[in-house]
Amino acid sequence: MAHLSTRLLFLSLLALEVTLLQTGLAQNRINRQRGNILKNLTLTHEYENHIVTSQLDASMPIRMFYRGFREVYNRLLGPTGDRVRGAFLQPHVMPNVPFPCETEGYRSERVPTSVHQLRPGDIDIISAVGDSLTSATAANSVALWELLIENRGLAWCIGGQGTWRTHLTLPNILKEFNPKLFGYSLFDSYNVHHSAQFNVAENIATTTDMPYNAAKLVARMKLDPRVQWNKHWKLLTFMIGGNDFCSDVCYQTNATDWINQAQEKSLIKTLKYLRHNMPRTIVNLVPSPLINLSFSMDKAPQLPLSCYLSRPIECSCLFGPKYSNRRNLFRQLERNFVKIMERVSYMPEFHSDDFTVVYQPFFKDASVFYRRDGKSDMSVMSIDCVHLSQKGHAVSANGLWNNMLEPTGGKTLGFRGLFEQFRCPTPQNPYIRTYYNS
Image (cartoon, rainbow, N blue to C red):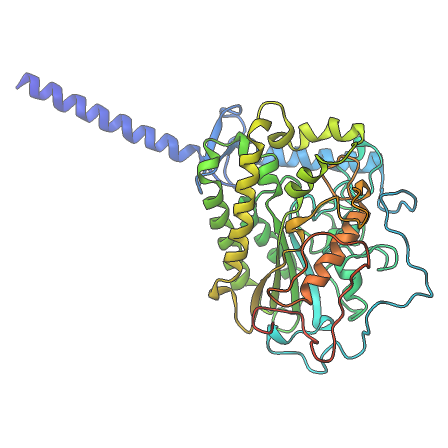
């Protein structure tokens, strides 16, 4: 009996220990709203979606400190987005040169009832979620100490600074068809600034951040009195994935085993949220060019010194000495994610008369070797050789615009010279292409 009592006591203590351990694990399981800055800061904790990460980014005090630091940094350095000289800028188009497309007749006389019958001029609101390539980080930077300045007004898919003649962006193209378009970023700003408008992209964001990013966008749009949810047609560009493999995968526990599955889960979750919360929306789903551009630059004859200084820090999984021996594996995982994005875009639940997703693959084969003479063009890259320059954003806007007017199966891949190919709607094909009207 004494032996049995001892055994029962042992089992009871073991059960209590397991319960306490499970409770502790549950407490360590964090999300963006829950986290304790004072507890175990240097260790890793588990997100509710099983992503292992630092607890720091779940801490409100840390986020507020980061926001304050960026504000001071931004004000000390001042704006850089209005620079007019430099090889990193697109050549300006002279006033006597007309816009490449005919614009009359490409806004419907009556508001369309189907997303598959949208003309370019029917887009009333433009928006974007994503990472630093969408916030146009360092697009106009000329020195490494300017790397945290976000030139959102120049961003390829959501910047509205200037016109297409000075800054070719998707909004500046669409403004030629609908001058009342709104939502685009106006000038240098962080995503908390009013001038960012409906560009909620955030530096260092990964695919797992996108459900939060999308919710932030919807909340911001609902606070804007200009937005008429059930009347206005909306265009959202969703580009993500670069940071997953550039600065995240090598720091996560066993990430190569689960990262693609986690990405797919977050991608689907984000698109479901958008479908339920953003009526009258067409989503451009775009793969990130970051990894492709990084690998293409390895073949360039000579890189600026700033590239060797910044890339091991900003993209440590590919260029840091500790993890760079696995870069080919990370590239293969990134190629897998590109296929996942395309496959998810075809899922029937993301296509109706009110909402649709279109995979736009022009970034898929992006390279600094896009010139006809076979030479690299490093002027499409920013000072750090990680982000795009203003010229790079213009080339990207040209590529996205072309994809939007190209049918499924006939979309252009990779970079082209600026205005080398510029698609236009026609009376025979007046609509933004979707899977249902291609």
